[in-house]
Image 1 (cartoon, rainbow, N blue to C red):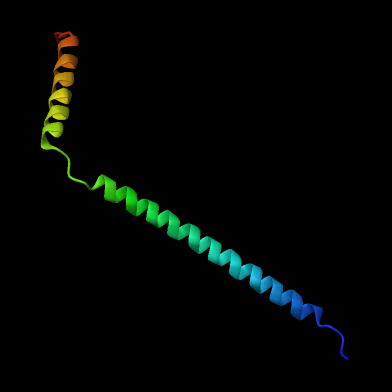
Image 2 (image 1 turned 45 degrees about the vertical axis):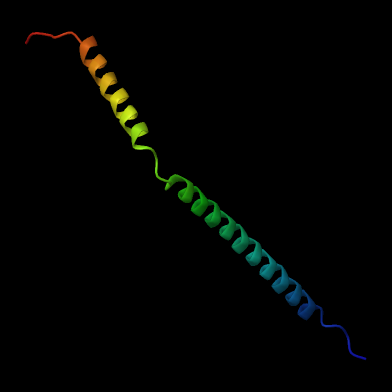
Length: 75
């Protein structure tokens, strides 16, 4: 009977660990990409044009108020 080859067993164990780690990394990457795709899908849904006009009107009124608050300084 021959003696056990410990270096072979160690190498096999290292290869198995490396394979498992790579599979975990790939799984995490796939999950992350799926989450990003889902977020983009939710953001890509069409919105009401009425909501957009309300936001634009609010922004314009804010600009008008800002211009009214600043005093005119003669040069």
